[in-house]
Length: 223
Image (cartoon, rainbow, N blue to C red; front, side):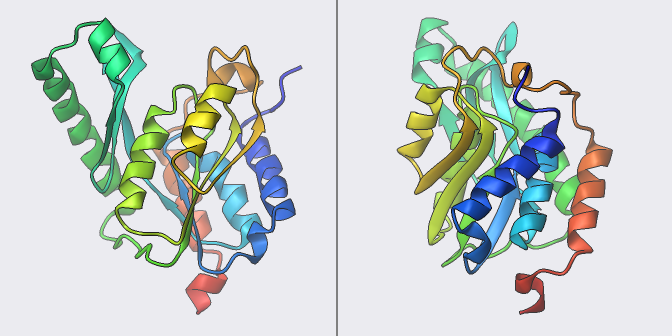
């Protein structure tokens, strides 16, 4: 039996763990989902922790012919990471990387506009920032989000995911203050294998959850 029924249930379980760790008492907490799959996970987390929900848009830089294999990633706010081992082993040229990055930058801007509109990006100075996704494989997109978040000087930076392989958790842990991960299977393969129901999350679902979150007052909203 797989550990998680769907993203929403994974988010509920993740929220329980975060409450056990005291994050419901953390002042100035901001929850950021990595869309699209991270939003249904982050929604119950933000509700349980009574924190605002926002998105940190990220895009994977897939290798030519094997787009699911990430050679790097980019994120809103200028975060960018590359995996030199993959780039070197597949002999991917700088021109190819630039072409792929330009394409993904255009999609990142489209999603940023769609999800955030004209809403200003929150000030992270002195805040505890919780980055949430539905799981980590190589961790490339999360590392890009981390790089972007660090440029804005949060007080604490925390990654929370339902599932990830142990080596990726260790890598990400070296970059942030804490990683909260419910399952760390040694034989990992892919995030979706640990969910019974793992459909692609649509833009419409992302927007509906963000609107629902905005309709729920939080301590931050009310001052």
